[in-house]
Structure formats: C-alpha cells, structure tokens
Length: 78
Image (tube, rainbow, N blue to C red):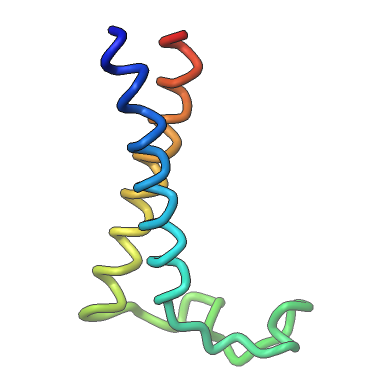
C-alpha cells in the first residue's frame, strides 16, 4: 500500500502531460462565431472523425478517464 502512495503522484504527472499533449494535438475548425453558438456545422454532428483524428480523440478520452481514476484512488488510499 505504501508503494502505491509513492507511485500515484508520478502516474498523475505522466498522465497529465500526455493529456495536455493529446488535447493540443486535436484539430479544431471552430472559429470565433462557433464559440458563441454559431458555426459551420462542425459541432452539429456533421463532422465524422476518421483515421488518426479518431485515434487521438479516443486516446484522449481513455487518458482522461485514467487520470480521473488515479485522482480518486489518491483520495481513498490515504
């Protein structure tokens, strides 16, 4: 149990760096108008992710879930 307390902070740092990198790698075609509710249909379900874009998107979700689980684990282990 003690070794898990020492591993979790390092795992959270690694996961957070990976998560930030994955978020920054994602492509966004949203302009200023899209942030206020307008747009070209990109966020309306018309755009379909394919190839590397889909892999990066799914990987981002997985890493975010792992980071959240590690944060909850750090709360309960103490």
